[in-house]
Image (tube, rainbow, N blue to C red):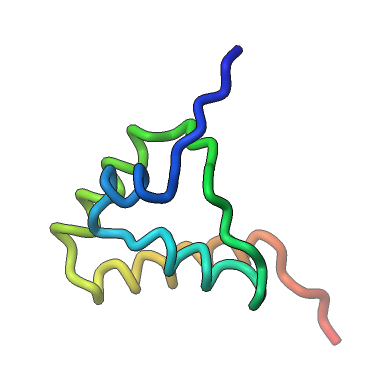
Length: 81
C-alpha cells in the first residue's frame, strides 16, 4: 500500500485547535528534531478531536486527560514496597 505523508502545515490546517509544532516540540526531549512529514492514518479521528477541543472547556479537556491517565495507570499498579 502507498504511504501518504502529510506536512505539519497540513495537520495545522486540518486541526486548527491544535498547534502541532508546539505539541511535537513538547512531546519529545529537548533538541529532538521536529519531523517535516508525518504519516497520519487517522485523519477522521483528528478531525473529531479538533471539534472536541473547539467545543469543550479547558477544564473538561484537562479532566478527561487526567481521568484517562489514572485509568491507564490503574491497569499497571506498582507493587507494594
